[in-house]
Structure formats: structure tokens, C-alpha cells
Image 1 (cartoon, rainbow, N blue to C red):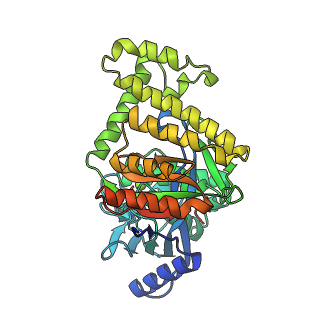
Image 2: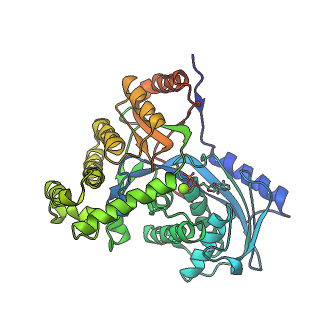
Image 3: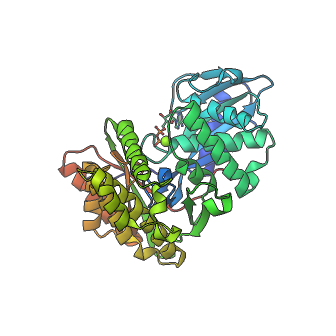
Length: 410
Ligand code: ADP
Ligand code: MG
């Protein structure tokens, strides 16, 4: 039998103890407190955020912990169990393009809070995490969100107390990632880590101009009562050119929207008074000899529709019926959007063959993680089948996580 590598989430006490000890070992005295924030997994709605579309993430039980103490000056000193040495900067030196390394995700949050008019000073902090890096489960947003709630507390900002305040922290942490860490992500990750609720998925709508109540709606997602669970498979696959491929997909979407005279591909939707997919594809045909633009558009438009229908089913308490939408999403990402890879396809195929109700790649693609919706009684059999399929194919052993919809940054 092939061994199955499970990555268990730490308990809150365990996470707090780890960062408290790391802080005490690295700096004199004790931290003022400990805060934490989850990684996330996207149930459906992939490559839709930058098309003003919908997506539906949940928070993972796996979290990043931070022990933090404010300073009287504007120095920032950081240690992480996942990085070597002490990372240091002065807050006044933080600016776009000016800071390198993992501390940019942390100092960037303090910088973005300042840009938003909130006064924060220097601090010492220790970080530790059970969210895997670069697995498409958003360790970067977990780190940013943990920092955001810690600084909110020590500076007495009070933003964490309301969903509108949390939505403001989403903007702050996204600016930190885009402008200081230099990663052009669309806001899905930060929204999930800061605004998801335990036992819920979060229906995010990226149409411009919506208020927080409209842009992020919690949808009860009670898997346990339905006898189900969400299995996450970190494929450990890393492919080169990921950033270039992501940029190319975004550019195709922008080009198609421009050819159609639309602000975004979302506006094709008939429910928003749009022209509908058939007319959009017909109008693109003369400009699209190889069919690439039309395939990209077909993915985006159909994925937004699938996300809305998936959320409706979940809202009706029919979580067991969403499987076909997951598989359709994967096929669309594989064939029309062309962002899957051998490892992700293998998870989906082997999990479905072993009895999963649905499975799909999650995150941007070209490696990272896939998810499977499985009956509680089938978890071991499905994980076993996936692990064996990887072993048979001579691939690196994948890592498995259980992902009940968990609590946000706190
Ligand atoms: P993902 O968000 O999918 O895990 P990213 O490349 O967006 O992958 O973010 C990973 C980066 O975030 C790491 O390379 C590191 O710079 C930073 N990071 C995340 N968590 C930690 C941590 N616990 N300690 C230090 N750096 C971290
Ligand atoms: Mg990230």
C-alpha cells in the first residue's frame, strides 16, 4: 500500500505556543498577543476575479500564526520558522520596489495601512505556519491577513470588528501584495482569509462599484451534516512560466472584452443585460482565426454561470449535488482555458474513479492543488487511489489536507 501523507492543521493552542516561543527566543520579553489567519481553497470560479466575475472560496483550518509587539520607533524586525535569520526594515523605507524577500508581505501591510490613513508604528514579530507555501492555498494572503489583524489590534483601529472593516483590510492586504511584494493578484485570496466564516463559503462578486455587503456574501456550506468532506491534494508540481501564462490569459480576456466593446467579460451575461455567449463568440470569430480567444471567453462566461449555480445549490442545502459542476469546471480549465497540467488531471481522474462526487483543479493552475468532494466514508479510499496513481506514474508523492470550511483571520 502506498503511504498517504496527511498535513494536519495545528490547534489554535499549538500555533500560539509555537509563535510565542519563537518570539521569546528571538527578541527580549513577551509579545503583546498572538493572531492568526487561514489559507484558502477556491471551490469554484477560477480565473474569474479579473473578469469582474464570481468565485466561491472557503477558509482552511490551516493557519499562519503571528506573535507581535509594537515598538516606540519605526523599526520592523521579523522572524519566521519558515525563513532564515532576522528580516529588518524601517517603515519609512518601505515603498513600491524598495523591499525584497518575505518581509515585504509583512511590512507591505503596515505601509498600506499608512497609505489608507491609519497610523501604525514599528513592531517586532514572529511567524509560523502550517499553510504550505506556493501550493495554491494562499500562504501569502494568510501571512498578510495575520499581520493585518495584529496591527488592527495593537493600533486600536477596530476594523476587524465589522465585515465592512474587514473589507477595508482586504484592500489594504491586496495593495501590500500587489505594490510592495509585487504579485499582481486579484483580491480573492485576501477576501477569503479575512471574510470567510466557519461552516460557510463566501460568494465573491468582483463587479466594480459593489459595497462589501454585495461583494462578499456568506453561504452556509454544511458538509458534515451532509456526510461529506473536502479533500485537498497538494500535487507538489511546480511548472515554469506560470507568471507569463497568467499574464497571457489576462491579456486575452482584456483583448476579447475590447473587441466586444465591453468593460469586462462579465458583461456578456444575459442576466446582466448582456449579448449572451453565442453572439459574443460569433462577433469574435472574424478576429480569432485560431479560436484561442473564443475558448478563453467560453471558459470565463461558463465558469461564472457554474459558480452562480453551484452557490444556489449550496444555499439550498444540496452540497451533494455540486459534483458535476466541479468536473465541468475542471474540463473547461483544462480544454478551453488550458491552465491544467498532468498532475492536476491525474488527481481529478483518479479521485473520480475512486468514488469522489466531484473534483477539480483549484487556484491558478500549472501545478498547485486540486480538490475533491468526497463522502466521509470514502476519504481514505479516494486518498489511497490518488496516492497510488501518482506512485504508478513516477510522480512526487502528493500531500493531503482535510478542509472543513473554517474561521477567518482573528
Ligand atoms: P501561495 O500564496 O500560493 O502559498 P505565494 O508565492 O503567493 O504562494 O506566497 C508564498 C510566499 O509568501 C513565500 O515565498 C514567502 O515569501 C511568503 N510567506 C508565506 N508564508 C510565510 C511564512 N510563514 N514565513 C515566511 N514567509 C512566508
Ligand atoms: Mg499567494
